[in-house]
Length: 105
Image 1 (spheres, one colour):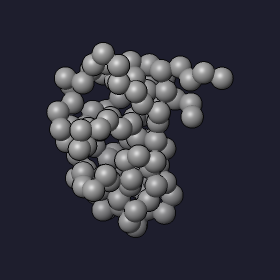
Image 2 (tube, one colour):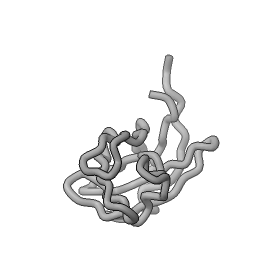
Image 3 (cartoon, rainbow, N blue to C red):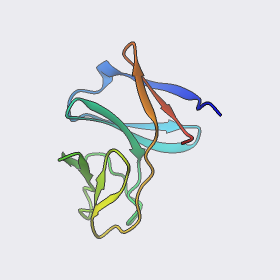
Image 4 (spheres, one colour):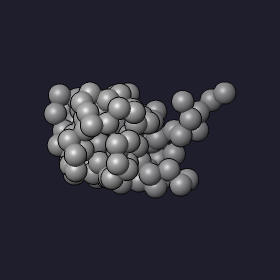
């Protein structure tokens, strides 16, 4: 089955270190640009379900601005407590300056 990608932003909307909230078919997603790469991860932290937007980006990870849990931007895996459950990461592609995200995968 082929994944269906949805255009959610343009590359000009995200500067380096930029973060953007997206609601895609009821899923809350955070788009991130870090070290020249784009990522799409779950918007809410798995620890206390607060938004990750505004979290510090470092070494390919995002740090929750509320309690300091750290997640890998590539796969959503937990890198530091207090979170123990990973967050979802979404397939993403960039074509002709359009950022597109797929919900499956």
